[in-house]
Amino acid sequence: MMKKLSLALSTIALAFTANTALANCDAGERVVKFSHVTGGTTHPKVVATNELAKRVNTEMNGKLCVEVYPNSTLFGDSKELEALLLGDVQLLAPSLSKFGSYTEKFGVFDLPFIFKDMDHAIRFTNTAEGKDLLNAMKEDIGFVGLGYWMSGMKYFSAKKPLLVPSDASGMKFRVQTSDVAKQMIAAMDASPQAMAFSEVYGALQTGVVDGQENTWSNIYTKKFYEVQDSTTETSHQLLAYLFMTSSEFLDSLSDEDRAQFLAIADDVTQKANLNVKAAEANNRANILKAGGKINTLSPAQRQEWVDAMAPVWKQFERSIGKDLIKAAASS
Image 1 (cartoon, rainbow, N blue to C red):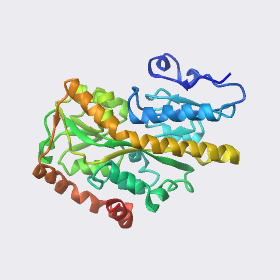
Image 2 (image 1 turned 45 degrees about the vertical axis):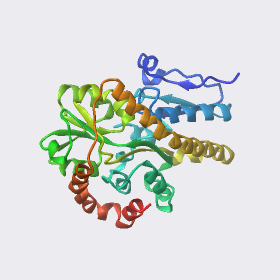
Image 3 (image 1 turned 180 degrees about the vertical axis):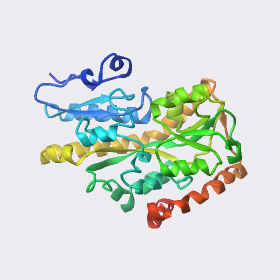
């Protein structure tokens, strides 16, 4: 009998330890654990992850069985890369901002205002330079990129309206562990505070940080708008995830199984990215319906943000690579 889609979902999974997450894999199937930090049901990453599990568990039934552990129920974003190296998990989709200690090349995705919109970013990921980055950590670390999962452009929220960069002066902003993001916040005369995604709501609620940057989907599904005055539609940065695995896992598959798995992974990636804009638009509307406030910028105000953050590009030109930056900006 075909197995049911094996998902360790929110409330149920929280009642179990990571080692006793619900599993419905058949005897003889290889269990493939997919861990991520996002909750809810409408977030683009959640949708893509569940679709991948459904496809693999149906089309590779009897061979592979994907178990999904969402909302940091298996590993938080500070531990998941180590877990992949140790073989405790086989699939991840961390933010591209998480790889600074492994390679500085992915910092190109964090440069403020390098992409006009998600279409621009997708064009870059389909260039030779963008595709080469998928294997930037393969030889030295053993990480293999399977594709880029777009999540949307980022926007700043804070305890008060942010219309120009000087409005953020002296405030504390949560950022990911990205040197580029930290320098971007510093360019606003603000203080960057790196912390795990799962800790952000509590930090905003208690005033540990004054603001954060994220997509509409993250702001809505994590309810950040509830503990912030408003969100400003800056579109200053891209949030995308590296859908990834390890060389060890891929090499352990037969040639036939590897080819089938990679084909499914690529198809899921392409379809997921086509649906992101609609999901982001829906979640922006959801924030407004729920009583959240959104600030829009005039062309002059937006230019102030661009000008304030322009020096960040120069700071990282050498470490990221001038040619890579040029390829991304001109895609």
